Image (cartoon, rainbow, N blue to C red):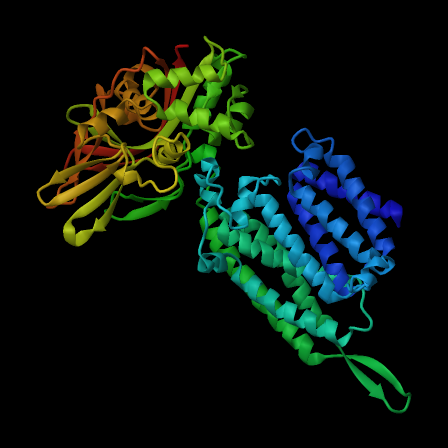
Length: 598
């Protein structure tokens, strides 16, 4: 048994190593240990097995450069050690004669275990709140504790909370079947309280895992997939309880109690199975309808399925596949030095590292919040200050590039051969009766830029509102007011000046104005080959007579003293003609590559 325990710990450690879910493994083991005393009295054999499992687990994770033994000094592992100590105390209670002298029970019972759990939970929460146990931000958020000093975690969409109804839309049927199964499990434990097996501990543990992740997924959408996974396991257990339940009957002739299948319970299990399978088929159909329009983000530029107008006046939904990012990464790989460093927002770090074969500063696995904040400062500072932040990263002077991108709406005037391009505008009515509207721009880095501003503390990181920050503006037309973020036009002028001199916005808007010099516009848009000029613009107001956008040209400052354009990659997934205006409209994914003048 000892060798099996050690191997179990080693394999658990290997799972954590390849998967990264060290906390998950520790949580599952901890809950199992806490549940055992409710079924069996603590004993030395179990204690030894648990210690051996933890030793096997530790032998693997201690070798990890990102985890190591600190997992047991100020992280989740410290709680696991505490639970083992609790089990040891409960196992040894009957041997401590001193307990009798101070009128404390010297024999274990469930009430004592409950009090110990409450005390241990209080100690654990105190250690977390005082910082003696350091948990990752996503774990704290999942537990319902908001890390005020960790703005990075608060700016990631998957770290945001969701409503109970949203969670139920994802896994509601599994949640309710799990509740029914738990009630059935308690009933079975009651019937068999004098003849229990350790499998009941595992069943209860699976139920608890499911409920824990329901709670964490509501606090933080990141855990939705975990909740669905564990609820799938607990749902399977629930159905099996009904299908395998047997009734006991006393046979007077043989004077023995026999077990017979309980057909009512079997019928209930079959009904639950049909419900779950039916919901799975329904989800599969809706998932298929969604996924058939989806493509890898690198091929869409994070631009999801969109409804576009057709030549007959109708509309259709397309998957906007384009090559902007692939072209950019291919260029980086083949036209930059092997020692070059590419500065981007963390979303694209893996793309640059794998397909571009170049070093990046941050990517999806970066856990250094300070480094992410410096990159946020690079993008959100004024041009001269931005360059200063790059020096903090100790990057090569002649081999540092910065890359950013967004989705643009383009309007080609067939008569003048000129193009106006707007960062994709989203217009919402804040107060229709008062004529108040909001206009936000971009579906790529501009859309993410407010989170960068929060991380860089350029705006209030906790209570800020994009439409009322120093990077927003307001424009008016008659009795209509249009609040805009970012402040590409409108008032106050100081906000517009600040915005246009902010690195991330400046590089894109200036880049649009020089597209003729730095981009090959032939791909997917032959009508742009003869374009004479490109003008970046914003929405000034909406013409109330026809609903058309009235545009305001933008004159972005020249950034070339700090960042020089290298190449701009434009890919157009869709275009359409509006014959009455003599214009061709198009969507464009544009990736801007600049070289830092360090």
